[in-house]
Image (cartoon, rainbow, N blue to C red):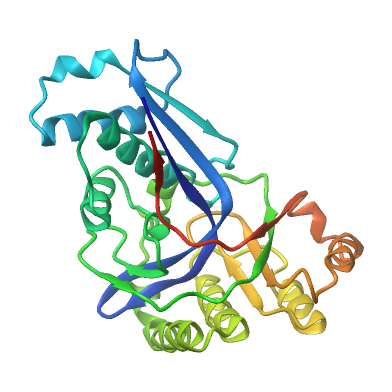
Length: 289
């Protein structure tokens, strides 16, 4: 029996047309999918992509297809589904690493990324460092220096959007139109990590969030930007292929209670009735036997 866990993402720090194609940097937060792989009969209600990952790895390592039926996958996760919080990436990446450990194999981060994108567009939460990632093909994996710490007040909408549905939208022209903005955002991310500057990271995320409005607009976005400005927050993240928004802050210095009050006063709570105060964390899949 082996266990692994992978963090959720509070939307993306940046996503758009960068270095010649669409890429992203996820925003890993302290909310995890924990997966156990052990001998046993498969559960009737298990998540299909997790089983697909297990089968793909068995094929990779030369096990007979029937061996899959002798392995049970159990997932413990409360990460909201289809909201843009990387719930699926967390499930399949943790499944992959737990499967590898259970069978005595190993997967590098690059190998894990390739396995994941073979199933679906994948978030970069599976990397330990903030990583500019080609989430369709895994051909670009550029790690940044250690990220500055911040907190994220995640605003959860009841609206759901499957990542696969978003990626079927005609987006290429709009993405390329914002390439200049996204290049600046990417440069700011690199500087923010080099200088350990959460404010600069927030500037990068906000640039990307504004650009995303042309593709998947968030309601009352101008009011959220005004709140960020008036409260001196670092910036905001959005799920570029989902519905959540994240307010970037430091809970030691920013008044979180006031933010809750302001969201209610401005009737923004109607769009995001659930909120989660989360800490940013290093990404990567953590395994234990």
